[in-house]
Length: 192
Image (cartoon, rainbow, N blue to C red; front, side):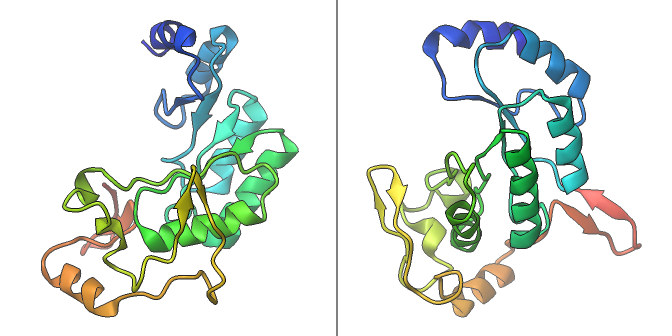
């Protein structure tokens, strides 16, 4: 179906075709890339630089989408972005989680020549209770969004000050803070 959809969306000239296949399907992705004129993007569900290395070496994507929260933090994501630069592949950091992740992603964007676009979800189900709900965990929204751009903050560190009271409250009310790969009580690893 990925090939069928790729052909169907070509006339609409999308910016890119995102996450068309599950991670690890490099052969199938190669098949779509051979016939698709739409730039292909993947990586929001990839967690290691070795997964990105395999996809970059295969030469089947135009854009990678690592998530700083899932791919090992700022330094690891910067390594992934530099590796992509060597393959002439753009980086569009995946970032649906909130202001701290956005601040970390922006730090990578600022020092990455192949940064293409910054993803940020502000009006989706887990942020739906108000327009600024994703900023409830920080004091004073530090981001100035204008005409599709976000200004670099002059604040120290990542530029955000965590509202610890709001985080504690969310932890008590049932929000499950964890990495997509986590350890169960019996010591085994699990995925969302």
